Image (cartoon, rainbow, N blue to C red; front, top):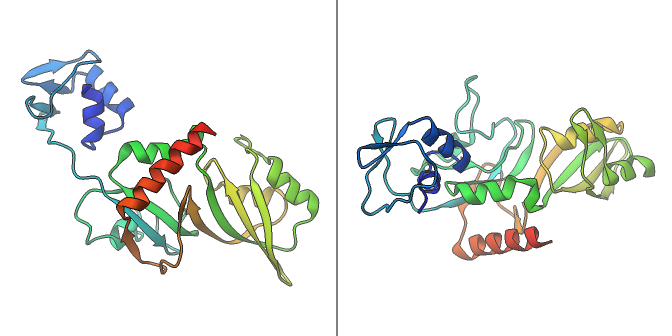
Length: 242
């Protein structure tokens, strides 16, 4: 196994960051500093250290789904002292990290795992993983506003990719939409809706790829079954092909 891949599997860093650590001379194998890329290591035989600390074999991969409540930040720690998703999953002893983010003022499905490769595949736009949201906006969007959301909205960081937008319910002062995206810019849906004149009142993510939030209660989490993990992996593979 290549050294940078081994470091990534062990949860030390991403593959790219691992390559940078190797180039900087921070990695030793069997007492020798390694600064060239491409070295092969045997996890059962070789002693690998990063910054003088031994790297142990990878932990068992685990996958959790969380129904993130409002007011909780989707990080494992927060300098401002706000509640984090790690506070909710405090009984999970393995190191796990959120896949992507949901703003503190958004709610819904958040996946957490220690599987770095899966996390990258879920987040990277080139894998075309669809994230679906229920979105309540002010007023009643006209046909032109809906078409803009579907075809692409010009934001400060560029025009958004085409999105699926369905009108679910129209109220007296607001409208419920179902919006599906295959990208995930910072506060993207909120900025899109603001740009067409219909600010978001409430936002909830209900699915990531083939995995759905379902009836998981707010503030609760559960471990994914192996069949669900397999389905997620298969869905990612099919998404990339499309």
